[in-house]
Length: 634
Image 1: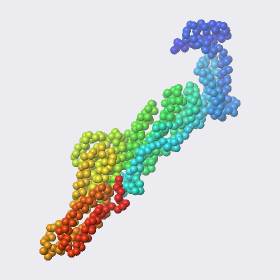
Image 2 (image 1 turned 135 degrees about the vertical axis):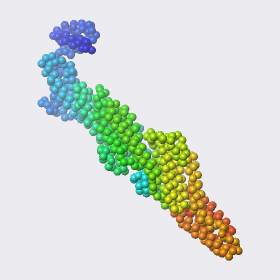
Image 3 (image 1 turned 135 degrees about the horizontal axis):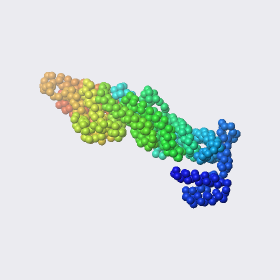
Image 4 (image 1 turned 90 degrees about the vertical axis):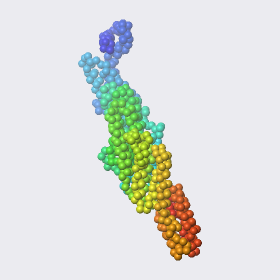
């Protein structure tokens, strides 16, 4: 290359020296072009240097155009100067042509004399003025052609998945009533799994027709060595555009300390907007900015990357700072699902971010840091929830109804199953050493499967411990049946069934049958004891009728007492309630009628018998629910 440059320079000098003799010049061009093929375009060299005065005239005209369009110069600016270039395309074309000529002159001019030195100074001054004008025009084109993010179209493309679930406002055990669900009024916590965009959603935040104008200016500024100024203008304008997009998406700028002070209900709403913003920013806005940088700065991959990073890193870091603040916040069970949502969306986005930021090590390292923080927060919150279930000490519910902790934990677990893939990637795999269900070994299952099995076992132990606090043994068994049956139903109606297995369900149903039998024994043994023959004596005994009447009287008193107590007890499940009614009738009515058949004729006018028989015919009311309690609680 160095040798070729010397040959061309020598040939150009020869041509310049022959400019005064046309015939000699043409002869020399012919000789040189035949002598070396590198000089085949020697006629261009001749044309370029054939007429210095022509070149000077062209330079003068170009300089004049640039000076006329310098608002702060001493020239005579035309009235067109204030008009946008898109309204005066001829002016823009003329100005760019002048800039091209000045650039070409500064690139090719060899300073050999004071006159050449003067021309170079004038050219550099003109070029500096031109770059200032182009910088302003570049900024104006960027601003004038910005297209705001269409919020209506955006939200029209959003899809979300909701789960109904009641959360308490604190740790398990705090304000136990907050666990309650009231399906008739439709109350409850609706957990949105995370909004997603329609597959065809895309936006252009700048008018397409402006891109070519931007490219024309960027090419000339870069060629002139003003790439830094060009990049700075571009990044400043586009950074403001992205900040406005975040505002439209509902993402506010908060410090980590400010986020820590926001109550969870408000913070949860902000987190939902953050999840949507991550998807929109990464899938739509960042890819759009990357494409725009490539189009405007297509002459330099390095400048493309630098402009893209400078434009977008502020927007991305604002989002990541919020994620970090949530990750290091106080842990509570209600936060787990939102943290998992945030983790999942950032995992998905991280792959795109790595592809977008070829040289953005800072951004990618920050993403990894936030992901680590969210994963630690999720695992820590899950562990705290496990501990809270074991340690929860609220009292059992009056009437033996399903305990709020049972509803809470089972609905919580049903929702956790939806996050199995994520939790399996976060939780340690300790399935090989786990044991549940009174020492029964767990088969090799996923980490989340093992933890959920252990969690249900902890809940069952908690329920059995609470049942011992009932003074009435019969109510204790009603409480156990209600709660364990609720657990079984939640397992059957969800993916938990795959984790727990049918054998687990059959074993719990066996327990319910045992408790059913124990309930009948505890609730009715005293009443049925009155219907035993022992101690009555023979019919000839003087005290026979007195004892017989006392037996019927005691039975009636027991029956009324049982009815009074159990009419306030709760059995939400329709099938269990009907089975209890039938079993009560099958146990009590035959015993009473057999006793009445043996001794009824000995009573005066059957007064006591008629009263008892009428009461027993109402036995379906022994386990009572009012009309507003008939619907099964979920």
